[in-house]
Image (tube, rainbow, N blue to C red; front, side, top):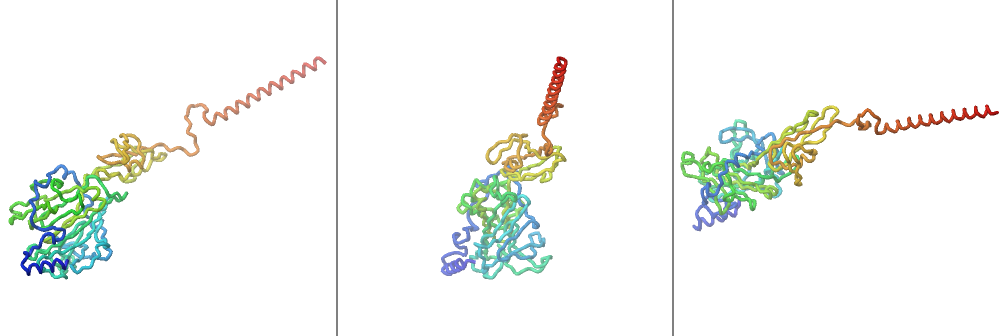
Length: 442
């Protein structure tokens, strides 16, 4: 933890100058759990059609996850979730005395769904203890599934032997908070492309004393640029939050926070478009916690279906279909032609535009390279067209029944020899006849 914050807060408290909660400027990232306005119609756009068109990318799959750490910070253990499910999980331990070189520590996890990879990194962790009640050696158990989870970790598969870690609890009267700064990037596996159209960052299930802030300049949480499926779902009902705690938005600090724990079953989710520069730089999000909970950096986009088919002179041997983000390029596929045939070109079932602006009409030839340069804006079907192979060494001569091409030379040579033969025969006969006339005169 920041010793300066502890010392300053303690001294001011003794002097009677401040209340237990210090100025918001001293709180990491300025993310105080107070003030602002209700998260709702005054700052959020209700857009069910947009939200319903979006699909989550790179969903969490432990078997497809790759953990990273230059300092071997990930450990093997068991995690207990809110539903009391105990399951194996990697985790890390963090305390204020942890010495982590955040500038050089590659701490995080990659999630690969076969087409795209989501690279999630933890760039900093800060503990805030305004009342100076937390020992410096108190350890937090942290799990990552492409996000940041605070909770409990165990050594056994029945979650009976708990590792001694600090359980963050909004009700313990200590006001301890933890803030995690994260960075997320999305890559296409086949090309390395990292900037896409219509990519959205989604905050889901806002209800557990969490807070959220985007650090990228020009891409912050701004009124009118946050979207939800339903405005009504952003706040808990009376039976879900008897204490009147609500989800709030602070315009002056561009962050969202949940006042308390109400575990709403509503779709309390916010979506923000991720701009191209943010994608290129990496989406920087700070997650704040007053209670054990989980927050994930989830990415969503409108995905389109690209299919690959073949004419009856071959079969598709590469991928038969793929889902890609609107504005991305196809991966392309391959074929196995029937005997005696080879791939000639591809066609698309709709007009398509290449990256350089070239428009190829539906049904017109596309090379395999051009297929991979198509700017996909709607579902597409590419069809492989094959042609008969040319036999090596055999001229491509039309079968007309007459000598053509190189055979004409042969026909000409025979005709010439016949003409010479006739002429020679006539000369010989003439010479014989001449001799006979001379003999008769003698």
